[in-house]
Length: 258
Image (cartoon, rainbow, N blue to C red; front, side, top):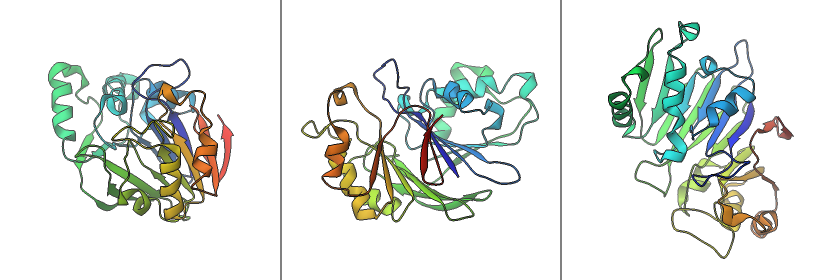
């Protein structure tokens, strides 16, 4: 399994961080490509990671704020290109509200409706399901009424948990229990707690409770600039901590820049 941070930033534009998105690619006869969230601009990051829009097999949404969903429209419009027709079915998966979001998008932009391929929209609640060879577990998270964190486990047992936006709740430790990599938001530095979000020490505490092997902090607001986020996370987590950057890739527990 290869995990790439597509966007490590937020809705506040900065030069070097796109909003939220993570790419998970499995190894096998045909690599499965799954995006978790599609913030504005991350479709370009998927291309920079080496995958065309037609190679995305499924998208999991943690919730429906714009900085996690805006490139859904860009993806659907790109797939209208005749050169990308006859691709496999695209699956869009998230909590209740996904179908309504898609209805609003296609009402405003009718040209987003699929042409030349099949689109499946699946509204789910907490629980487990499979995406080809991937096991996916969805866990409710404190942020919005529709917020879900995801744990993805491949056929070899490699696992990643992705929090989405989150506040302190039991679901954080539940979704990350024993994972190889926990991609967890730390939107604001310690001392600047903001409701609905985590700080590095809070993310570290969740990773510690879960027994995660490695913690990747992400979703940084500009207020994080100038703060030693690694030291703050180390107060509560004694495992390996990494600060996310766009196109940072994790492969079998080893991080490399893409």
